[in-house]
Amino acid sequence: MAKKRVVAVLGHEALGSTLPKQKEALKKAVKTVADLIEKDYQVVITHSNGPQVSMIHTAMTELSRQHGKYTVSPMSVCSAMSQGYIGYDLQNTLRAELLERGIYKNICTVLTQVTVDPYDDAFGMPQKQIGRYMTEEEAKAEEDKNNYVVKVEGRGYRRIVADPRPIRIVEIDAIRTLSDAGQIVIACGGGGIPVIEQRGKLKGASAVIEKDRSSAVLAAELKADTLLILTGVEQVCLNYGTENEIPLAAMTQEEALQYIEQGHFEKSTMLPKIEAALEFCEKCPGSQTIITSLEKGVKAMVGKGGTVIQ
Image 1 (cartoon, rainbow, N blue to C red):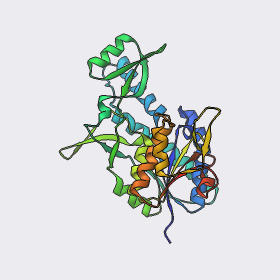
Image 2: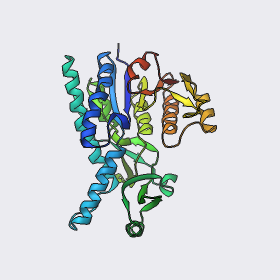
Image 3: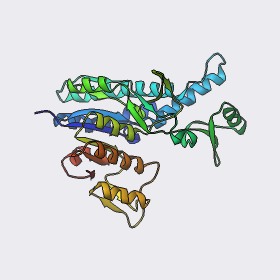
Image 4: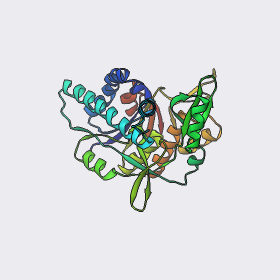
């Protein structure tokens, strides 16, 4: 009997925001992943990269400012760098945790590109803030290079980039082959490296992709049984953060669409997770998405917590 396949999505809390904090956070995060593996699930891991890619972009920009012979790194390259070093820490920390439990598994990180539509409306309305805070003069220089900036009250200016929807995972065959062979795969880090396909060639896009949406595409391509989104709350709530907060143990696709229309989900936090769940469920009838905290992930897989959308 084939193992049940789970695409586990690690959020910001699982990774920390600096190199030292990342190492500490991962020691905790991999325990949940190891629990899933120990219970004989076939696990594919995706993860966020918000603070990390912003840190890399800031560092490379500062390097180019201080030393003229170096150039600014495009967003696609910064995304690739973040996938590499997060994957390196994640696979080694998970390997150590599994070995302590007497489990030996091959773990690999796949540098993953995800195609986006160059005509996606998001390119005309960028919203994702990245990099350091700039002066007005520096912001003007960015605009002269056809980049978008936004003023942040009391902090200065910051560059903003698009967050287009993912279309296709370029390395899907490699990911599927490795997973089918029983390896633990880390893929689509930070939503994947955004690329545009032009005449058979892949060109990096000035964008970041929402990791939950890419994870839904990956889970659908792998025909996963469960998309497990591990975040900072135990359950999805209506009226979140108010005295009338209502936690949800489950919701149907129809209910989720109704709650979205009523404006219950914050655009930059919970909404992408709900949209990802709906996309996965639509592409894979009979599957489920579970949204819960890192601590409750394993229990939620057996119906003891979290919010189930199916």
